[in-house]
Amino acid sequence: MAKVLIQTSPSDANKPYQRHDSQSSDGHPFLFTDIAHSRDFVNNLCLLRQHEEFCDMVLMVGNKSITTHKVVLASNSPYFRAMFTGGLLESRQSTVTLQELEESAMEAMVDFFYSGKIQISELNVQDLLHIACLLQVQSVKKACCEFLKRQLSPENCIGICALADAHSCRELLTTSELFARNHFVEVVQGEEFMEMSAKQLARLVLEDELSVHSEERVFEAVVAWIKYDIQGRQEYASEVLRHVRFPLLSAEFLMDRVATEELIRNDRLCSDLLFEATTCLLLPRRKSQIAKERVQPRRPMSVNKVLYAIGGMSRREASKSGEKFDPKEGKWKPIGDMSICRWGADVGALGPYLYICGGSDDASRLDTVERFDPFSNVWVPSVPMATSRNGVGVVAGNGRIYAIGGFDGSMPLNTAEYYDSKTGRWTEIARMNQCRFGVGCVVLDNYVYAVGGSDGTNLKTVERYDPETNRWSFVAPMNTARKQVGVASLGGYIYAIGGCDHGKRYDTVERYDPAKNEWLDVCSMSTPRSGCGVGVLDGLVYAVGGYDGTMYLQSVERYDPLTNQWYQAPPLSQPRDCVAVCVATSKRVTCSSKRLFEHRNSSPPSSNHSHSS
Image (spheres, rainbow, N blue to C red):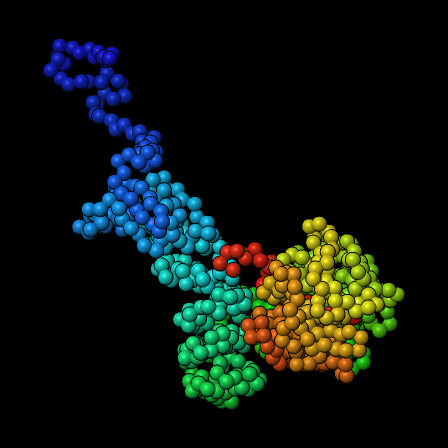
């Protein structure tokens, strides 16, 4: 081996090694760092395990044996360190059995101890979180929580809340509870809502920031939760219902719905809540004597939405008037009049702005369009359609206003077009397979559906338009042919409401499940309705106005999918048949449109639309 010769002067003979380097002339030692050492050390450990060299521990997990090194386990997990250094029996054993852990997840965790890498997915995250918490591996626990935060949806947030609570993941619990509050209307439609504990439910509905614009929605959700398992949950009725703010319920709802509910009548504490709310309405000055948390209005973080009903036939003549329903106020209020009368028109909303299209003014079929600005309460002319359309179906989706089918005065139409507010132009799209007027239209999962209507014969067929391919295709037909049908989407389903076939008006309702491609009958309305308008507010489907075969209607009903029941809602100010109805935001915002995971890419929670002829 070659030697390094260092020359010294006589005076240096008795001195230790000296560097004659100009940059190290002070003689101080320097610290050498091998930047590859950590990587090489880990790689060598992995090789030792791979070849089962110096392995001194076997973990038995289910039917799987995992060979490893005690020192690696102890250095990565406080749980194993305590096991091997605390004088426990396991410290003297070469095999340790771990009960009730998922095999592949535990193997992945041991691999992580050697490599610092672990694959987290929808399939293993719950098992990994459980193991990370047991073994006190904080980095993996934190990574699992971060993964779950990114997967939050209205369908799985309740389950993630429960998972976070069970494993003391406080940050994940806070985030998932906030998500549930902000998406309350969508959450209550999911299966997980019905499975949550009384403690979870109470914690959810007591919050001021619960994103719901009507306390009636909270009451109905809680009652539906109790009735889901009436035998097991009736004892919790007062515990959860006391967080419903009864004094904020309308007088009509208190008398017509709450006072007739057996759960309330059969529970003394719940009856006391009803009495307190009634007293508050009759003697407002006593409101100050009620606990603040029961009379404080909620402060939802979500954007408020209102329901509009515009035009239609009223007392044998077309109307130019309109009105809106705000669930916070619980009543209809007039809005500015259109420039002309319209019936058989339809309306869609882009953000807070409404676009009413076509219809008839009794003299002719219309191609004209008007735009409503709620902030100035004024209708202004917009770009006309390419075709006159009465009985048109209109729906907003993908930032567009679609106008579909209708009757031009001489024949039913299979044409369709959309308006782009950015370009200010109408563009024709592919034609439907059938002509349709009195058609109901709705958007679900970015597809546009045209439901029923008539081509001279009343139809039960349904078509779906794909904007990506510009093609219409048939889906499963309804059970009943329906012209002038009201249509809405909610919770991933499409509802076809009322309508008529020849001289018969329907009170029946059916629901389409796109995953199964089938229609099922649900609860019927209390009144037959053709030409009713339909909208979705706070997770409830509203059926507005219409014609029952004898008279034009000003009554309104709302459907709760949780209970599969229809309830009366505040009536319109006047009867309206073939009325244009839609839901719009009430602020200047841009509209935009994620169960545990397998359904995460399902539809937006709600959309709506009508109907006319």
